[in-house]
Image (cartoon, rainbow, N blue to C red; front, side, top):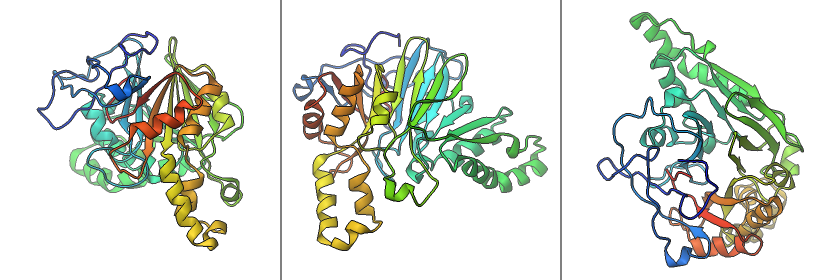
Amino acid sequence: MNNQKPTRRNILRGAIGLAGLASASVIQRAVAQQAAPAQQQGARGGGNRPARQGSSQDRVLPGMQIVLLGTRAGPGVDLKRAETSTAIVVDGTPYLVDCGYGALRNMVAAEISPSKVEKIVFTHLHNDHTADLPALATLQWSGGRSKPLDLYGPFGTEDLARAVVAYCKVDAGIRTVDEGRKVNPEDLFIGHNVQATSTPLKIFKDDKVEVSAIENTHYPEHSRSQMPYRSIGVRFDSEKRSVVISGDTNFSANLVKLAQGVDVFICEIMEQGTRDRWLAQVAENPDLLNKASIGRHVSETHATPEDVGRMAAEANVKLVVLNHQLTNAGTSTPLGPLLEGVRKFYSGEVVLGEDLLMI
């Protein structure tokens, strides 16, 4: 893809299905389709089913491509959506944000070589954002990787890296003896705890991107006061393009700071009706209003369509992508109610995220 500003004609929509259902590589090319009537007011959904054309191991495209590897909200196995993960590919170099279950398989489907990933940023450490990390790491090791894989994220990321090393220990012990391998997993997987701040903080910078982070509002104060764990949103700035990934959050003034003027704002979303149902369940048991519970967590810590619209409008973003979609309809995300809430505040273009959609 080129680095044109997002428009209806250059937003590429793709979802690779089962082997043999395809016609062009997600990373190589895709064809934007005519928007459906319900989408002609500035929203998109659905997508083509491109197929691969040979190996992409050495393919390098100029500029930044954003590939949604997983758009499912919450922990669980879903045959239509993988758990949360996004690939940011800059001049052929892939960076990952989160690595939920299914991300690794979708990387292969998108022809993004897992062996080339050298940096992963985690928005927080819930298992639906980390579940595929052990698979990615151990396959990098057994595939002959010798350069470190750096893991960045809030408090606990260093522990996560040590856990990955422990996961690799038995396999590495066998293969080191049986296959003569020389690389120690302890030298490969390096964790970096990132401070959760109220102003944007640079995490790292290389010759392709600068990555910064800020604390979001996924953990309410009554939880934050009892634990060291935090949740962040992240921003990638390349020479010609920028993207913010909200992480799990409700309305966050900090995210508005981080996302000012960004080209692409990838934001989690919870359908308002879904939130109302969770709140109703909590209300049925008054004791839950003052206790830690799943219902309280879900209803308090995710962004409604109006929250997304407010953040997008206040940050003056150019394009909104609805991701990590939490709806009562499971994998069938209703576009209408989501768009209606966002539209109360934001008048720009909105894209309904799908696995393997590339922007």
